[in-house]
Length: 542
Image (cartoon, rainbow, N blue to C red):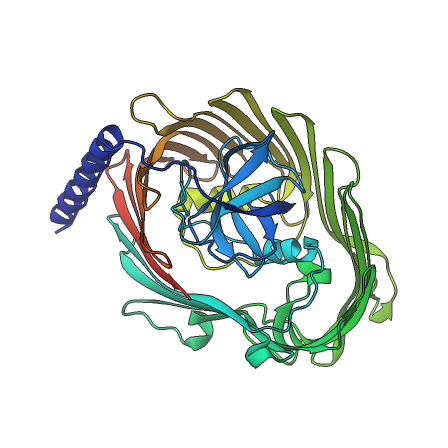
């Protein structure tokens, strides 16, 4: 039975890879830039995503390419992964060097965008906290009382067939909705809900349902608002979601507010009224032609069964006033401890995130970050074992990144990360470098080769890889082909993990607001084990 299954997976993957290679070589480039554009600018840059602010995002869809404007010339910059009414979050095109306030343009509704290099990554984690940080970076817009409703519904299927691990199929259903000024009133609402389950395996609603956002908002006058439900407060983005009542008064330069409610359950992210929390915050913002400065300070008290569990201060600051230099940082300082069974005040820095980005010259971008955050929440995602290990070992710590573009079609980049030893984790070291050539002659694709190294207390790993990607038909069909060789050696096991991983991805924009994507990944290990994973997603926007 296993032999038949293995032959089917091999035949399935080989057929699709041959078809893709044929298409990459023989189909010409159809997408050309023309028409009018919507103007925007970069508002925030995280380690994985770029956030762009517009006056509105009418006509922009998931999968669209946003273009950077330099010296009256445009070049592909960001591929949209998610969007709200006035901003987009997306993946940067390999080698693009962006900084805060860079000018970005998008095609107006009805145009056919070019997705030259990178399509939507269906398996990429999107940090809820980083999305909230981007929202916090946005300029306060003049409130408009007109109704505006948008959202999306998506269905995903993740299938895994393996000789070494149990095979299974998982389904995920997502719905997101943003209704502003319902019936032209001061009432607004938002939600993002995910429901995930495995075939023939049911563990209950609490394990399947994830509510990341579910809140109603009412504007009181021009500056004040009150929110009821689950929502991340933009002035305290890294704290995470808050279940309860939030009040905010946001003026031109100063803002203040108060919060009372509870925090999501630690184990299933559900509603838990026993985890009561309350606090207040004050913020200040300076805006000028040179850049922006934003600072907010919050005091929080968190309880467990009406007993103080934690009392802390949260500080968030962003600064882009210096030319070519962007700074974002957040800190949590604990102010409460129990010593010899007696509550006492104690100052202890417990969470830190600092990101510094510098662009000394046009072709070079440098960034340095330090991440010691503990409560990062992600939208649902699916990863193989090797990728999960790498993500876990590289998120926290010090990271230095550089991107250099010596020639028009050549991009070199690299990252070095080091995690300091703590009481919870041992130290770890990781590095990555890649070389990209855009617009390969004859086939018009983008080719990338990369190398990654990982060294921790329990695993030493090397990853060699390469990829080929391109737009296949007028911005409607996009494909990418990649290969990786993974060599992991574990200190507590005599059995290394050696894998050959090949992946094929195709995205098809069926209609303006309907997109279908498929990713097939085949893994072969040197010991004869294999696994095949198929990720399908269909998304309808409205």
